Image 1 (cartoon, helix red, strand yellow):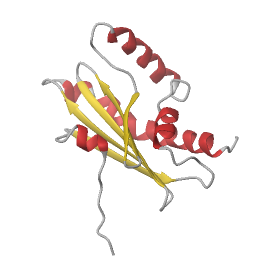
Image 2 (spheres, one colour):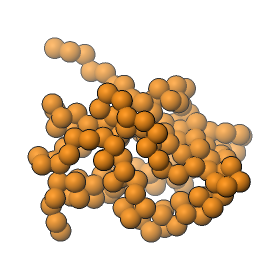
Image 3 (cartoon, one colour):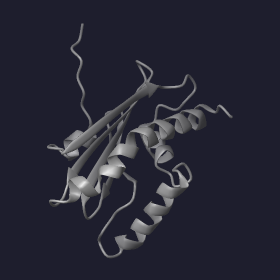
Image 4 (tube, one colour):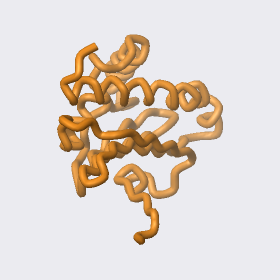
Amino acid sequence: MAQPMLWSLALEDIADPDYTQVWLDVLPAHATADPAAWARNLFSTAALPRWVASAVAVATLGRRAGHCTTFDVRRVQSGEALVGIDARRVDVRFGIGVDEEHALIRVVSAMRFKGGGSRLWTLPARLGLAVLMRGMIARARRHLSGVTR
């Protein structure tokens, strides 16, 4: 029996993270196995809660000044898509992996804090991320499997 192992582009891109979270869910029977499609669906502004989409829109305005980048798919490799945000106080990477053989979808987050107060400033986001991501995955599962509700 193979030993359990976790590899992710998120952990490769931020090799020494200050904070991580992992979510695992079942890949629906008729859903796509394309990790880039999952990443685009999970992080589309239409899929995000309105308050998060608004915050992303505001952050995007600051992007011109070099403060923040949005949720773009940066690369796809070995069944996983990498999405990242670079902000003034924190860098965040999400690895969205699809394991078609075991019918699993995996989201790995890795955060690197910048500066002394970053851990405190990012606390609300870190606390809300667990609940928020569960909802985002559930919505993506419905959308990408063609199930309507």
